[in-house]
Image (cartoon, rainbow over all chains, first blue to last red; front, side, top):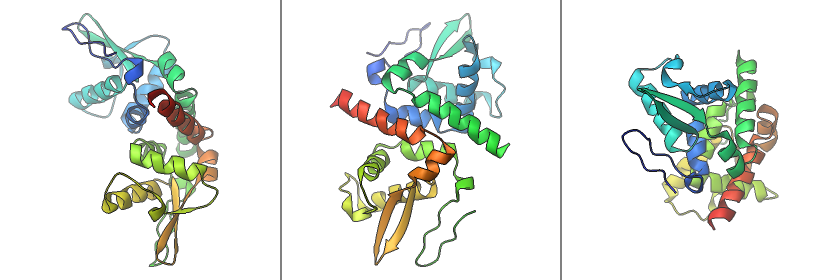
Length: 114
Length: 114
């Protein structure tokens, strides 16, 4: 079930609404994949402003929205900042091993290409 | 190294040119994912005409081209037909376990959604 948005709560797909094609699409962009890798390595949720990305602010906002709407990332407000956390446990239940393999593949590709 | 196209040979990326983002993008479309699942289950290469897809012929051609250009599928001519085979071994060397996890996720999603 979708969690409806309120002024202080952003809409997120419920686990039953997360689609494989949406998750793969979200992960198929290098900027979004960089965000996901950073979140996977972080012990806590990270504010959007913690990411130094090679794109404009509005493009950054777009990428976080794609990640949220596909179910990859959960965004919550803290004050005026949006905090981002991977929905790793939910994705693992839906698609076992998938996120792990994508993260490994990204690391292997980075090592190969330098 | 790219294998150059000739009138009888289609261009394919070499293993060093296959990018994770391109592979994930190729797999993020439901029609292309259906093609990949069918190829993964087939003992031999399959002609494009063997697929009964809910899209026009030109869209089908587009999807096969995306799969070929991303390095997911190898297309070879036999007479006037194009035969398609997954580049499963090459993908496995580049991104261990990734294709397997995507195929499992697709099967799990199909079972969940009916």
